[in-house]
Length: 195
Image: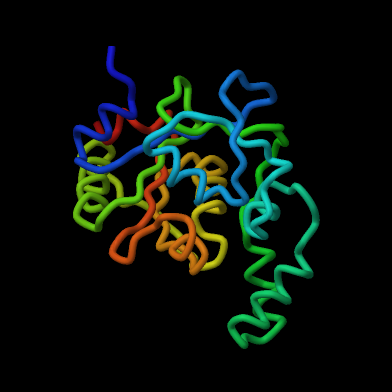
């Protein structure tokens, strides 16, 4: 029987991967400093990452690995010249994982928490169209350009909703998200609404 990743790849003609938070793993451990970079690698490989190895401020914040609110706000303030109060407000709005697991598994795995694609807008339109045909409702999708792939994974899980992400500068520079692409995150429990 084909996996959900295979179905999604065939249906939308895009690369897809699964992601699952776990306390223990039997998958090979690879070292990645950020979730978006691991996602990009997982389109062709299955592995796990220790959350202790993550160094990206967005990943650290949304997984609550450490309280880095102040340093993250200062980084946003410095890199973008935005007002520090606005930077703090943006950081405060980052969705947080409610549980803390040791590992994140990536790839064509069974029982994924979410499925992720770096896709083109036409495929995003097809996903939204399938969602609307299935549910009769519009998709509510808050967008951010800060810590956006990692925090969108958490937002998708927390709200049990399909989330699209326009990426952040780092996910585009080192995380594999192409210039014309966006990320789509679909909770496993909602896959049936778009197949």
